[in-house]
Image (tube, helix red, strand yellow):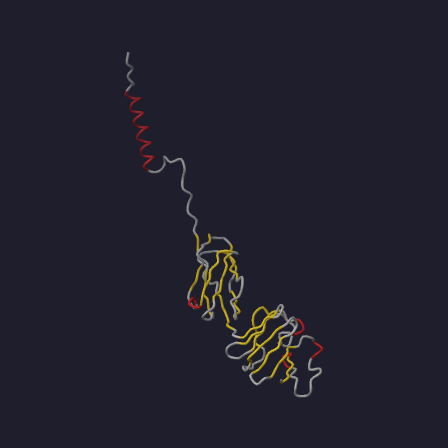
Length: 224
C-alpha cells in the first residue's frame, strides 16, 4: 500500500525549503561570517636637508625599513606598512647618513588616523669627526658645530652640559678641519690657527703665552 503525505505536511516542507533558499541567497546560510575589517593608517612625514649622493634609512617599530635619498626632500614619505587605530608607533634612525646629523620630530605616539608629521630634519656637515661619545663638524658655510657628551667641556661651548643636537661653537665661519678623540676636540681655521677644546676645567689658558689663548667658549688657541 502506498502512503501519501497529507497536504499540510507537503506545505510545511515547501516552506522550509523556500526559507533555506532565501537564507542562502542572503548569506545567512553560511556557517561562518567574515570578521569586520580593521581600519589602518599610514605613518610618515617629510624629509629635509639630505644632500645628494646620500641616503637615510628609517625604521617603524624596529622593523619595516624605509630608505630615502635626496629626491625625497620636501616631499611626504610614508612606510609601506599601515598601522591600526590605537596602536603605538615609533620611528627610529638605526644609523645616521655619512656627513649628516638627522633629528626625528614627533617620533613616537599613538595612531589616531593618518600620522604624517614624523618629520626628519637632516643637516649636512662636509667635515666631521667623531670622538668616543661626541662629535664635532664644520658646515659648508665654515661654521663649527659640536654635540654629544660634554665632560670636561670637550665640546667647546663654555660649559659641561651634554648636547643631543648640534650646537654652534662661537660665531666664526672660517673653520676648515676638525679632529676628535676620547676627551678632546681640535679644530683648524683657514689661517692655520689650531683650536683645542678644553678637556680639563683647570687647564683654562694654563701654559700658553699671552695672546695665544682665548678663554672664551673653552677654547685654547695656538698657531702652527
